[in-house]
Structures are given as structure tokens and as C-alpha cells.
Length: 215
Image 1: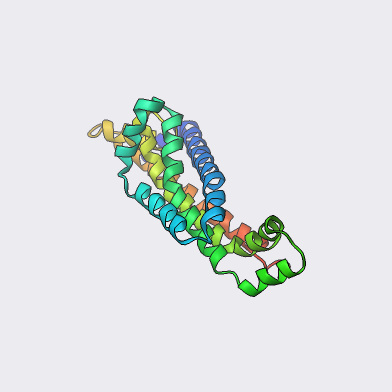
Image 2: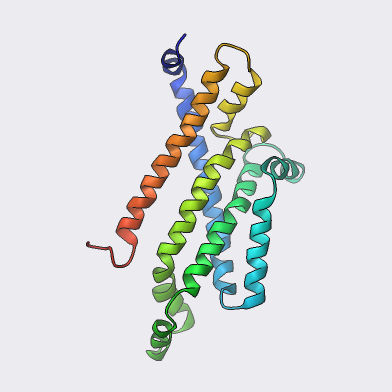
């Protein structure tokens, strides 16, 4: 049986794993944003807290993926829970770093002018700082997404969802006629998702970046 014939027989299974993989990545990225952006906003002006946050986020990213997934089995069990938590931790560094960089690179004169107009701290943050920092933050989300798409394959090791299950099945049945086909399907699915997400980020950047609207 050729690969096209094999794929024609189980494409629905590949599609299910692909959707599950994308959902897993989006859930984890969403949690990273909910945690990372507020922490960045609270610490970007201060030296020691900012360095501590970046240091912790950087340290988390250095933990080998198999080790982190394995450590989370004891408190969270198998399945989606340890997968989401692990991927969220891995996504924190690009989200936090780019949010902090984006906020710190803003022209102080713009912020001072807003305060001079009577705008409060929260209003300045929401209407001035975050919108101006958005392009840099979006780049962080783009990097985090590409990072998670690859690492999410390891979720299969803890019975998590996604295309890693196809890769794991292929590796577990090495030597059988269809082992390579399964692995190719899993890898190709991740590559396809990476291309689609990157294109989506390019579109979002095109229509949401200040100075490009209406261009």
C-alpha cells in the first residue's frame, strides 16, 4: 500500500488529531497570555522583579520536555491536564519577554503627554501602552505558537491529545509496513499547522498593527 492510499483510509483520524493538536496549543497559549501579560505589566517598570520574572520564565523553558511532562503526572494524572500545564509554562518566556520589551520601548514622552492630559494609569495602559506595544507582543505570540506546536507532540507520552499520538504510534511500531506512514502523517500535520498559524499571524499583524491600518 502506498502512502496516498494509506492516508485516504485514515484521513479522518489524522484530521481529528490535527484539530486536537491545534486546540491544545491554543488553550495553552491563552493561559500563558492570561498569566504572562498581567505579570509583565506589573513588573516591567521595576528592575529586580522584572529580572526575576524573566529568569523564572527562562528557567522553565530549559526543562527537558519529557521531564516536565513526567513530573506533572503525579499531581495532575494523565491526559490533557499535564499537557496544557506544561505547554503553558513553556509559552511564558516569549509572551512575558516580548510584552516587557514592547512596553519598555515606548517613547516616555507619549506616556507623559497622556498623563498630562489627565489620563489615569490604567487608562494609559489600556488605550496607549498596550496598543503601541501590540506589534512586539504579537511577535511573542507568534514565536510561542511555533514553539508549542512542536513541543505539543510530546503530550502523547502522557496520553495527551494531538498529532504526537500518530508519531508515537509510528515509533512504537517501527519495522512494520505502516510505521513510517504514521510518523509522516504526524510530522506533516504539525508542519501544516505551523504554516497555517504563521499565515494567520501575518494577517492579524497586517490588520491590527498601528500605522498599517487602512494601508
